[in-house]
Amino acid sequence: MVPRLRGLGRGMLDLILPPASLQGQTALTGGLDAAAFNKVTFIDDPVCDGCGLAMPYVDAAAERCPACQAKPKAFVRARAACVYDEHSRDLVLMLKHADRTELAGLFARWLSRAAVDLLDEADVIAPVPAHRSRILSRRYNQAAEIARPLARMAGRPYLPDALVRRRDTASQGGKSATGRRRNVAAAFLVPPARRRLVEGRRILLVDDVLTTGATAEGCARALLAASAASVTLSVVARVTEMQARPI
Image (cartoon, rainbow, N blue to C red; front, top):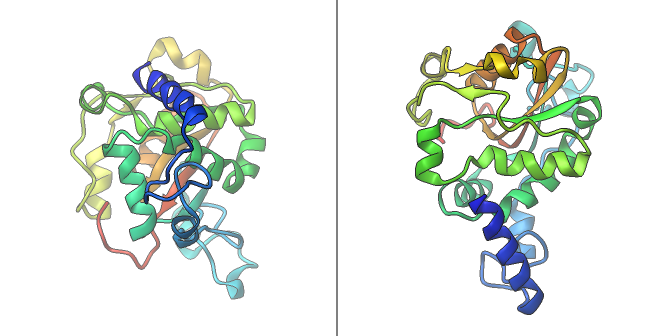
């Protein structure tokens, strides 16, 4: 409720004063000026259908990257709007840690373009959940702030609490791929009272950043265990294979 009221207040203020960008200039849209927008590296086809990784045109005939071919993930398809780098990272962290919830609508618009095929296939949209202790400290779940307007844009039901994080896992930052998987092992659950919302449905899972996929994998496995028909994934930014910087 707090983020919604904050967003309403900002919207009313925008009617009176022209909105300024995060960089102090007149904003074109969503808080970004032209220079900042042009620095974001958006991901376009061809991409791996399994994890959303940008693929060289020489490999475009293959639908999946070698990693996804060798080890398919629990989520069947994934798409990312942009590459996670120094430019997109600052924006993601503003939403995540600096109360810049107005960026959620911008990210939702990015996902509505990047994941249009997944949205067409989805029955419902659900965010990667945050533990209640994180919500108390941050006052909101950044994945939910993105998923809510995305569901509204796509005309799909929004399931904010079908999936819960039953233990407060440590930050994934700085951990290896194996460490990330162990950190979120059995961390997610569909409560028995929520199973009816999941059963037989194609669920599009929404998050801010995809690194190794361990968190999304844990969520997908929990949803499939609750009889979801399938799980796909849409994220704002994706770490590339060559990036080693922790999130």
